[in-house]
Image 1 (cartoon, rainbow, N blue to C red):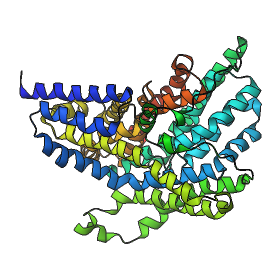
Image 2 (spheres, helix red, strand yellow):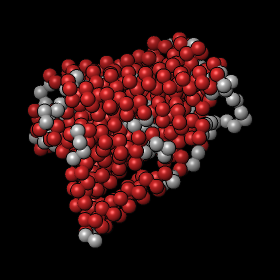
Image 3 (cartoon, rainbow, N blue to C red):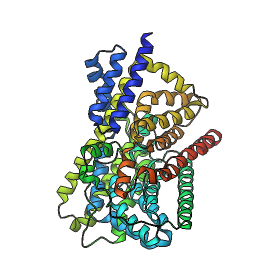
Length: 489
């Protein structure tokens, strides 16, 4: 057996160990370096050098690029929760649309808070009790609750809508020199496809269930509180990339909730400031100094997208504090909790980036890279396949996306430029591709959400597939040909 074949076996074994042990609740902070060393060992690479000079460099590079987004996003989400704003937004949507459109109300409430920058798990903890109340009033089966929340929080607002502050929309930016608004027309088409197909399925499932006399069953089993769960729950939750469950906090029960205007205002600030920074402010700034070694010898396109989201989240936090200072009597505690909550998710995804750095440096990976790049359809199709597969294997949209782009992002960009393909198309395809097979049963967010809803995989997972996996795949099948025919728009 050749050395490359042995190395390839080691790479496959390391990935299998990473996935299997993570699903059993082992921390990625331990698994990522350990399994990376397994791959290095099989390829005959020196272990200590592989750890400190490959793994840690890749980990530190990811943190250097994206930790500000994790930090500000977690603080913003915590403040939105503690001020009562997220609850008011959910209540307002349900009140406006009524119980006769209960599913639509839950989906749109989730979409508004996550597109506005609120952390996924903060949204979960607020939306679940709200959805439960409206589903009981409309007599809609409990098993459809997880799918409705997934559609609103984890599909089109995460990867397709232009300007989304989600980390999945941020990761491609430094690799392709794009902004959060990359390929806005294609993003809107993809978002409409996901939303439309998801709502069609949920409406069909609701009518079918009610036609059989199936309604909301209120049993004696209360939804599982992941906050009081085991460290295994916490580790799985961290794999979902958005929040540390131990710091998420219960939904706010403030006696004087904010007005709808005050609740919605910070979300509007995120979107508006993000747009202004991306399209007006940064392009007009003289950032030539970034080419100097002391600033990393970089250029504006590599940092502008991340900077836009940083400024947008920071501005929204300031506005939120000004509007809700009286509802945040323990402001320092809220900020500290949010800051602490950013650490485990950021380190978890960064360690996956470090794992990818080691894998990309091993000789057998060159063969894998050639096979992936040779997928028929060019770099866009190859990128879609790579992000789908890696997100599915890791059970993490941002983890799979990071591994794919760390290993082959520069190659995809070079191949796209040679073929005359706008990098914005690569950005949008990569983001959407990461948000498909990541929702396989071992995904931390799915495990957490099912527990909160008091549902099981057997009851609800089919509907999650129908709204969270199939519509994004269909959206990819639509926007890739459109991008090939008309370019990025």
